[in-house]
Image (cartoon, rainbow, N blue to C red; front, top):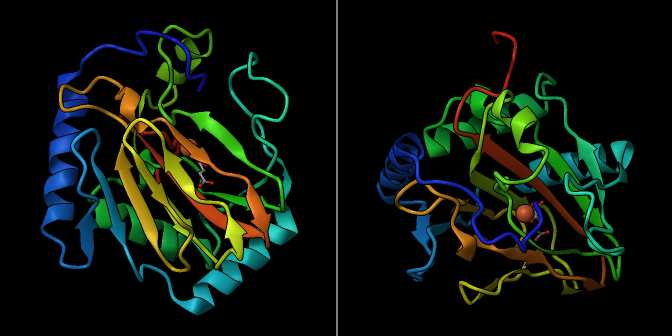
Length: 228
Ligand SMILES: O=C(O)CCC(=O)C(=O)O
Ligand SMILES: [Fe+2]
């Protein structure tokens, strides 16, 4: 997930096809709006969650939170200071939400990694990074056997944040302030199926309040090992 490498990966017809089919599904959904930028495919769905779902998800995150981790060993201190929580996809609370996200995108739930909750207290942040894997990094060999590249990201905001905590895409030139119940969705790949550098994004530091989100990353192939 380091952001410095020059060539993060090669074009892929398979990923390009996933990109086209998800984009077509999102474009055909009246609840979804595309952010008007050319550099990347970014969409949002305003009231994806109910207030009740947000409240329960926050409880789950608070009960299971631990310091967030990074794949890349080379990140500087302070790069990702939030707390995270792996959410049990088979729990009666998480499963329907998890499957609703996959259905919205038209992707197999089995391609989705475990949903991750994130909590940011004041000053906590996740500095600019890509969600896709850099295919020149040592971790890539292992990732290929676990579903391959990350294609789409879906991220939900679970509360209003008093100040700070926007999701900033510095290369695409957009800054999304947290908005309770909203799902933000983007394609980490370019039209040719190669990683899209313009999807670089940052979870900006929270200034006042606490920020809760969940993140759902989808792989190009099946991520779940077991039949479900
Ligand atoms: O906190 C945010 O707004 C961004 C989080 C993020 O980029 C991630 O979890 O991959
Ligand atoms: Fe991210």
